Length: 226
Image (cartoon, rainbow, N blue to C red; front, side, top):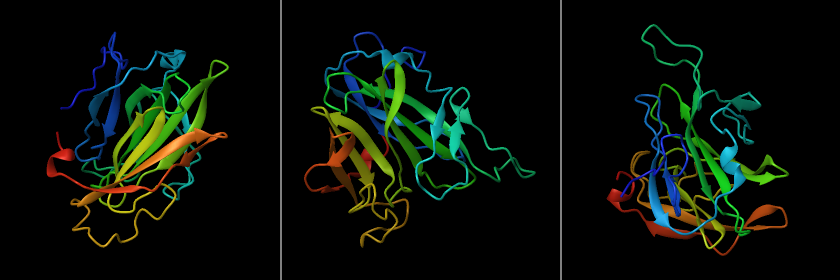
């Protein structure tokens, strides 16, 4: 099922003890918020809930999509600035699907995962992911990365499992840090991946480190649209 279980202010409802699997469906035409698949697991509330990630400046991951160094959101969005006569964007903007709060470092304290979808004139759905913890009452970036586009390493889900971070990308052998657009030998168009890659990470020595081999799993048709 799909749910965001929010209280109307972008925060989890009282007594909510579920983590959220982010399934991005952001594109410019039309724009749509991400869906989320909820999975039960207890995690305590953290003061990081007080950080206003909808009005926040994010660094751009090391990725050549834009010459900008940062993205500053206002009310969850940095809209495109140039449009043609039909209102179609000529440059790109960014939109947040909100922050989700789960413990991905194994310290028993919630961290924040923020997903920024890209607003543009095409159908691509690449995005940026940011993971923050609260250090000395200030948000500290633990990791940021760019996802691919749909079957080429697009984001299927990101969640916690026993205090570890799990990232699922669409396509075969799609792992953050690799060439997400490399031919995986099974894609039938950008729209139609046959499998997805599940990679697990553990927070150790100040960074997320991959643990074990990535899993290649068949993609069920219903797992993209719920």
